[in-house]
Length: 482
Image (cartoon, rainbow, N blue to C red):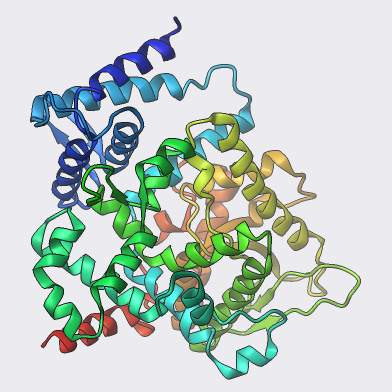
């Protein structure tokens, strides 16, 4: 028996001693405690653990245990620490990177960082505001409806899929978030029982609340079949086999999934029907979103139109010193990028980076007439690709650049909005940041090349404050309660 098999069998034998629902409730309570630490990591009794490890432990609890274990039904701290240790050993054996080539190692690092850093750098307000802006505001704007190639009424499609109006669905989850924070309970239905009269007074029935929870939750059988512990980050509410309780497995996962759940419900519907209309149209909406960002910050940005002969970047921005070419990519980072089966994981991440590669090919094939300015080429992603230095290294391994490789960057929308705010405020400050970035890229340092590290505490106000649907909904729900 090899080391991986030994670790797996030992881990299984310990997990099988406890009922799954009791394990999930205990781990969920630990996630509530750890959430007080904003980094998502805690050091306790000489053991370092994080939200993502708790999510992983929940997955294996579902995988290898069941609700009908009557011996050792109560889990104590010693049991928990023992399980954490065995989880670490098993994960270490699973993540054996010996004999991997350079690209696979880079991809491996990208998988790890995008799963782990999500829990540490969760910008829930800006992410929620941006998604709300696209799915509701831009989607219902008559001017944009007329100009699009493929139009999907997101609200109508969402109601067709779920049976619930999108705004009502969002409100239900705002209420759940507020209740989780205020009561620190992980049994969702217990929380509902406490406030069901108030919910009904503001026009949400118990049936609608349960329907919404169903779309945010999965049964044990789903997780046992999917071979992907990362799926608990997207479906953090688990419906137990015994008594059909709805347990919130991880508060961090719930907060991460909250802004994007409507996106995934509609996107998965189209994917299951082998239809690409949603991804195409969402990409168009992302372009419109960026157009409004440019207008808000009064940026000299030109939307480039294809001439039918060759592909062109989406945007060209002119400053006194730079020409900045921008190609947008709206695809969210794949759920499958952290599956248990390594081969499937690398397939998923390679498809994702193939799209990034296409963006850079498009950016580099476009010729500009002004040769006096420095040309910067940016692949702009809707979602944050954590550790962009590593992501750029992947691109540089899988494609050839003719020259000035250090002027090809991956930026996420948060970083880009911050840059546009700087450009609006002071071109001199903007130039200083760009020059610092170029200098770091030329040195090809593995530390501190990302804009996040250059900006330090600086954040864009656009998605966080200017289009703040998040705070407005909080106030609206508060008034309805009153």
